[in-house]
Image (cartoon, rainbow, N blue to C red; front, top):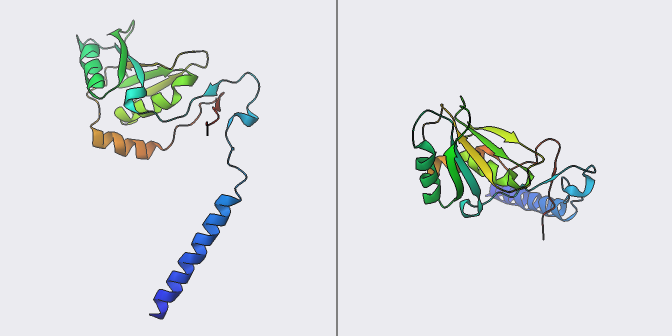
Length: 171
């Protein structure tokens, strides 16, 4: 019984320390655009829901109709597919995700659909929020919902790419 009282007391003390640390936190805006060097793009690191993600799907393999089939699969998962077609040149990877500052959070979500096996190509000059999904010769299938959720847990939160700063969070 005495051990339970001690454990309970320790839990209460730990909770008090956590609350005090959160209330006194002076780094609440750390990583936000406040200290961003002039001219660096602001990256939207908000993790999006599939319904809010715009994508273009391109086939960089010799498999006929792959872009259309995978575009349909993404539509069934509630993504906004804007374009589909063939890529101008082949890709050896599973996939390549091409995006700009406004597509950082969307590309992060899409990485989970490829179990973090897609290459990423960030273009700081790109102005839209659409992510190009280029399917390569290593592609087999999109991850299941369970696999996506596990992969997102492994990936953690989206981060601003090198040479950019996270966009300030609206409160």
